Amino acid sequence: MTVKQSREQQKQETRQNIINAAFQCLDAEKSLSSISLREIARVAGIAPTSFYRHFKDVDELGMTLVDEAGLMLRQLMRSARRRISEQSNAIDTSVDTFMEFIQDNTNVFRVLLREHTGTSADFRAAVQREIQHFIKELSDYILLRQQITQELADLQSEAMVMIVFSAGAQALDADAKQLLLISKKVKRQLLFVQLGVKTFKEK
Image (cartoon, rainbow, N blue to C red; front, side, top):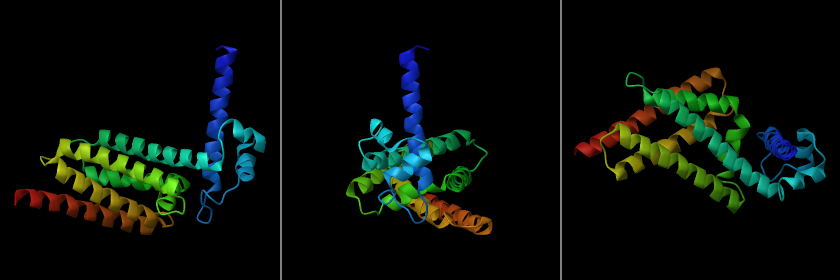
């Protein structure tokens, strides 16, 4: 590895440390707009001035967190869909994977959930783009698994994503027993949507 490559790798690692630190700073009370640069720098273990070598300001970091949160979740759901066989239940596998993600990455999901209706128009638009990515990928998957039109696949996908995100909001502060009940309920709701589309198609 050359000196230039080593410096670039170190720069990327520091940038990722800042992103991880920002996620750590978020909780039920703190949103993207309320965490400070100094707090993020302290958790990341860097000088506040070093922050500006990687991000223009906290707002740019916030946009990066939204993108990162959406990408992390989409990659996980893609992995879950690859594990689904003809014998396994796509809804059960997907919901279980999603709930595990929320439990393991609470603050990551908080970013998507909170900023979807937050005060920043830019953050709201960024989260909406991530949601549209979810809807598109699920719609493509539905078209492969079900003999339905593009329009019905899009409608089914959008309904399912909205149901799952709503369940995710309930799951954030749920204990193990509550999480089990939420998962069971959302699986039934998704099945209702799937069966409803099938019934609509057959009319």
